[in-house]
Length: 579
Image (cartoon, rainbow, N blue to C red; front, side, top):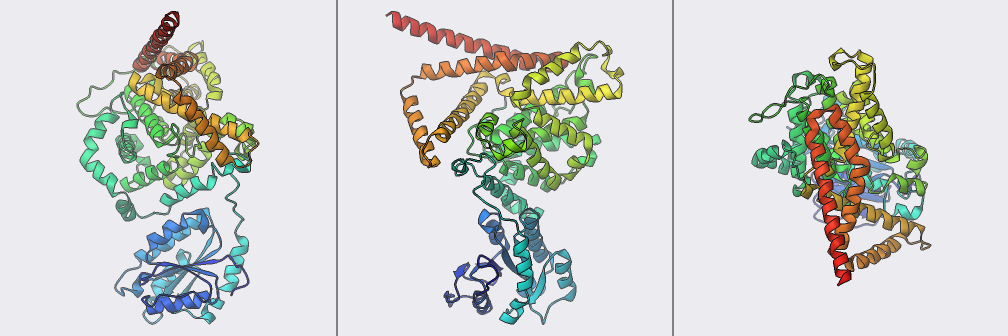
């Protein structure tokens, strides 16, 4: 047994393997049906390492590599595909090796070694493996003597790996909370998609999306170009198609040629972003992200930043006082990108909860726009990896950062003050076309941030049915956060059990509530939000962009309907009490 690191695991990938699985200990039996060379290698490895996991394919190993359990020092043995088919090229082997190296860029856990038939080995191919990043190339039939030569390399690698604790959560420093919200779980879900670099692999992995594009593309496209967009009626794959169509439409604008990426890369960007959202969240999930994306897109269509589709009349040209004149297609693309990832990694709790539990993120960002700062940092990392052109152009990057940070409702009134101030600016010329460049740039970023704020709360500006659905979803998420806060403050050290008890108690209370009680609570919350935040914001935006008048009309109409419902319920209650 190797004494250097008892926890080291060997991952052995060989297409000839017939009995994939894990073997522990030097006396672990290897099935008689296993390939003779694979069986011999497993026995040799078990003589030096405590655990050997055998995989018959690269994708099977990559799925395992994306989990947190794989973040311990590991030796990865990759069988050269040409061992099985001498006529095979080097593409498959390099692709798999590159995927392992991609994993190491985020979590440096593996030492990759290529196994090849020495007699038939193409020296050019072996050099390519080494230049790509393989630690060594060994004969396919292993021996103790050959493995001994890897020990110094493995020792140095193991010592260099930082200790990663799955118990430390970025949501809260309270270790009980970490059992509910674990940062590593979010990272795992992102990693599942990041590891697949090759477009062919994407085609196989997301064949259902390709089917939706061909079978339902036009139906979904029609939805994307209407304001009555009910994201909750669509599946995750259908939402993915909607997002794909929005970006494809925007990227057809000639001036955005430098940002165009291939369909496969665009799909990879969207699927990776989707993986960064938590489906367990009732509200802040991928569905909300696409809803905000579509709202942003529709705003930009209304303002004439992007062209409409064939068969739809073009929007009227912006008047001399419309701030649409300061928006360029590049700004529109930045807004779409920001909308797609504005809640990346959202844990389903609020900034107030993070601050009250002294979470590491709260300490990192000094309690200011904690979640929004995290969304920005995480999303920018994804953009740098998956769409580098958008990250390398400073004006685009600045708009993405500014607009994501603007979604913090804690700075809402600060932005409202800035927005209303530009209407009172005596230095502003009658025509925005005459603005000096520095002032134009200032207005542009402020209008973009305000558009993002409108899109983020656009639920109240949709029709009442759509608005009601989202209001209920947000109430459910706030209620879960309240239950978590109650569980954290309890004396019980078992947070999971305490949380379940709190939730069960709340469900019992809700069972005793009448439908009118629930509707009244929802109506009051909607009116408070409309009166305090939505109506003033949309009114200011319509002043800046008259093209968005339909949003303010809906906000006002929805508010009136909610008031009528409150009056009807309270009148009915009063009548019942008198009887």
